[in-house]
Image 1 (tube, rainbow, N blue to C red):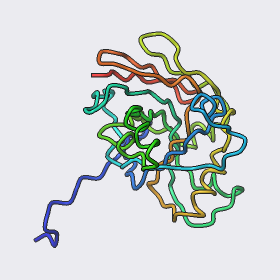
Image 2 (cartoon, rainbow, N blue to C red; image 1 turned 30 degrees about the horizontal axis):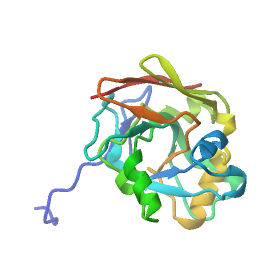
Image 3 (cartoon, rainbow, N blue to C red; image 1 turned 90 degrees about the horizontal axis):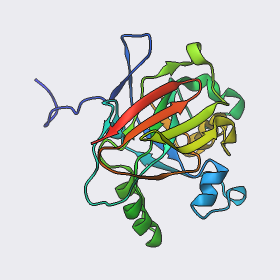
Length: 228
């Protein structure tokens, strides 16, 4: 007989390219304004700001290939991101050792109810209502480090209905992946199953039902997400 008073919630697990095993998700950290051009388009000076993070929920990650347009909003924006999956963690991880904790990388999106996020910003409140809603992080299968290494350069591109909206390069990140891992570990105890969304380049903008988003990051390939 189970010792729990309710059924144990299902574990969020992501597929891995070339494997029949899955990657269980523990936490999801997201860095804000990690590309200079995007920071500028959002009205901030990237040269004067330390990194900051917010969180999504594990079950916000979605592998279905569809993004259901969420309620209570009229302005949902796309943000293409590279997801970093950790196989181990700890506290006070050094930059030099940070990449030893990475299992792999994947394509992802940080979909944002921009109007609701904007309202929270004005009032100095947390962003979860704009960021951490159901299925707000479409994600592709994981590429293992043994297959792709640690991508630190490569084209980042998002198209909506065939038109390029976002474009940049992984080498334009203000805070690189090892620095993000190290910084987070100073404030949280990182662990296997943690996911870090590593920021988005300039060009974020709205989508509507019926749109098709093509997401590409070299060398992680492409995926297509339909807005439904």
